[in-house]
Image: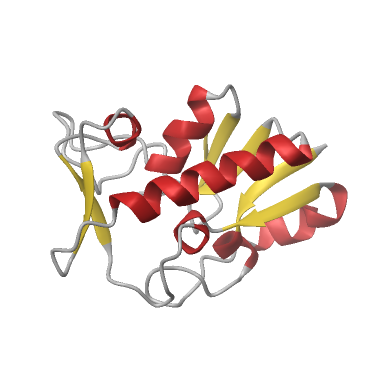
Length: 150
């Protein structure tokens, strides 16, 4: 079974600050799965390192619907790059037949419950997580300590 995975969880330095979020437990199990590493922000054309971003006026669902934007800490609108990265990630999932994605927590792209958005609860879906879920792909969120959220 093919599974999408946030590249940073595999130790690839693709996070906004150029670091990674390597999770040893995933590295150990990587041999058992056909993993497809992805970084939606890089797939969307953003550089590494890059200014951190937050979703304004909603969460990833609202961005996908065209009702919210993603703005970086420099005040630049990077919504287009986030949407392009989410669409490219979904395209890879369809090509590979992936029905599951293991994504990084607390990310405005990948998070299931990211704090980098403006919602009533203060948490919401990242842009890529929202698009994958809307396409019927199961999303599993993993934090740097290896804790899983489905």
